[in-house]
Image (cartoon, rainbow, N blue to C red; front, side):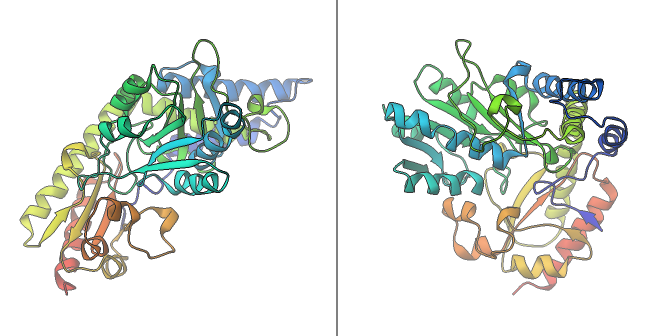
Length: 382
């Protein structure tokens, strides 16, 4: 049996886990305790990790703020700008209809608070157009938020072009980089953004830790305020005791990604080539959702004509773990809102599954499991 749901969460890298265990066993202090060496030791671990995140992104360490993950980071970005929006009258938001629920649900909340939100739809290729962003940006636009890579389709959005367009405008640009962080390393370094969200568990790190990146402009951070109250940890952006071992896990995952991202991408690309070869060899009708030219090498969203995704996932459960959409919607069994926004017909959506893998997925096991999945799809075709 093989795990093929890496876009939901990745298995923790054993090297990362080993280092975390050392911290759990040996670093017992609170990183914000200033009166003894135990606090100093914990603080050194945290600041080392902050440097490792910053190095991977090519930014300054004082632009890195630790959070519980991308969902919290996204919430801090939007809710943390409410005070500034009320002061300036800039209460218009531009985002897309294919963002993660952490963005969409927060925008719904803000609409109840008097904000106006413009939701851009992708084409049936899964991509947002730069011209649509240009069309909707106004004088009262507060923020534009576009994910770098869609979690369901793996389609890469034109965030570099959007950042270039917005760089000289009085509009903040936020990138949800959950699916690209640690993978599209060179690309992320080129994007002109003000805020960025990420999670460690998408790159072999632990669950429950991530970061919010706030880029300085003219030596000043964006006017984002913390949305919960407590101490001044993370300069008040994210109060609460810093989970030192988890932060260490994020930092180590970043270090490994810095060294290995090029070979990881190539390994994933080779696995995708195997998948496509087996797909072509099998006599089965299929359609790939989203333009493959802009798709991540570790993801495919595919419709098997006449094959219910629910039936396929249940029938193939003993061979592989796949999904039919975002993990945040897995209990709803509703058709994918991402594929619906792309304008795909309901039947195609209901027959689509997402398969995602990692650089260390075993090639032979990957091939055998995928062939088994295709065989099952042929047998249960309506």
